[in-house]
Image (cartoon, rainbow, N blue to C red):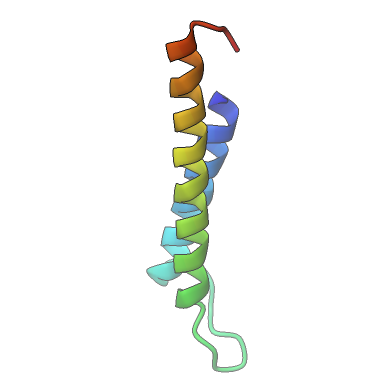
Length: 64
């Protein structure tokens, strides 16, 4: 679970950097910003999913 959370957080940071224009460049005069925002959204959603599943496991008392 921790590995999934770290990976999805890194995915979200990568998407944020693309969305802010720090990484990437326009391809055929297309902006890459919208792709970055979608990557950020997916990474954040995965992080929340892993965090919620970890919370449920600890609440049930079972170990991972």
